[in-house]
Length: 269
Image (cartoon, rainbow, N blue to C red):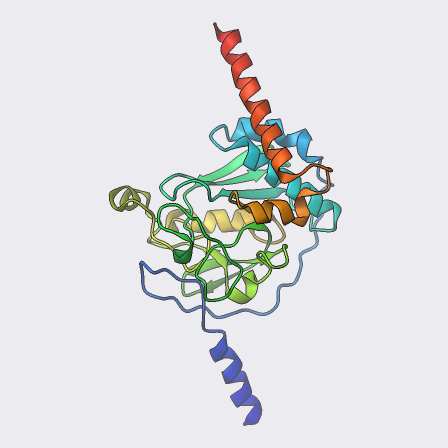
């Protein structure tokens, strides 16, 4: 009887989750611990070797953000992260009314998805401006995450994520920060009301695409969430492997992109 009571207590404690202020609160059951999936992917190329290719695949994305994502990924792989071939990049400096999520397959040299994505209600209205690793903040977290297992919960098919940056996003699993579909992620409604609906910190997607995006990213892939937060840019462990600062990486990529665009314009005359 004591064992049954303890089991019921643990399950009850797990009935908390990332949900929306713009829809009913959801209930999700926490699955068992994530079991890493062995990767057979070849070692990744250096970040600068694939940056130009990724720029061409996503010309509307900020080249500086792409460069930071690739640098963080390369640094993480050199330090033992699972060698998945897919990378998701979220640029939270953009408004929620814009598409600001890109999912790349770096092995196939393909852009798989470009999508709208919600941020947490505590982070802001149309623009996310505040970020947190604290439970109960209802804010989005920045930085590099590795993806984990999928499960069915109160928001339907969902994807667990584990933050790789201590103090920045490493509470993601405990906070139940997951990728899931949500009806409040409606681009047409967002244009009418001035923003997407918001989650409790989760990167929520349109229900129509959520399963496809999640299946693309599940099991030991990487997700990079960006915002020009000075403390995070200066302190992240994943921007130091090349010997350049995050600001240097951003400036170099943006400068190179501007120079390339200028050269193309001259050649077209």
